[in-house]
Image (cartoon, rainbow over all chains, first blue to last red; front, top):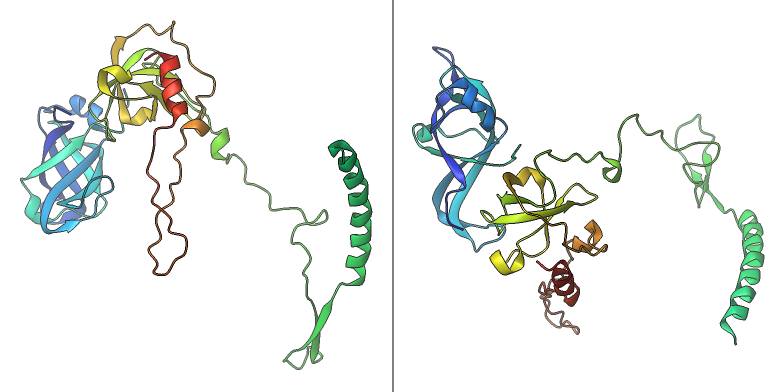
Length: 110
Length: 193
């Protein structure tokens, strides 16, 4: 179907203090969301880090393809400028910092 | 023989055999003596071949914990923005991104939607509230007839038998493909959408 059914987001880094970082929680910056009040829509939404590998993987409904996913979900807002905490089922790899994460629109609360 | 007469005959005979069976059971409570180690155990133990049921009238079944209900008794809530006739956007599944019309909420909490089929090839289908966005557009469906047999059991996924690849198998089971049954088509026509 036409249209992108997910929002763009960037993996900005891990939850961290100045010296230590906690790899289990990621900080995401969602495109277009620049205030804490605006993040309310995205709380609870699922996130996907989609990447491609050399070997094919089995998919549920399509033919095996090279795309792989790490799923996660938004847990809470972070700061006043629209950043958001997210927890993934397995931690995001550090090389993804600065790269694209997809925010899907489900589970929807509208 | 007339079937009713046979039925009565069977009922009577069944009662007799039950009593007889009980008597027989009490006689034939077989036990086995087995040698057991440990000097305090008297060397042998008498073990029943057929063990008593775990739960009887004297020993009640484990009490269910308070407040936990089976799925069929769960409370089903509905989003206030979703009323019959609302246009929803489906977010997941093969029809993702399509706008469909919401008809009613089924007993399990899932939503019954239809394309309409002629518009976007979405048939009568169930979706989940959490995986659909309700728009503010509402369509008047007061004139839509909905057959009563559209329940969760009707929409339940059929278990298709998969082929078994074994050499020398006598019965070659063909892989069953999902086919749209005539009943599905008829229901779609009745709804008219």
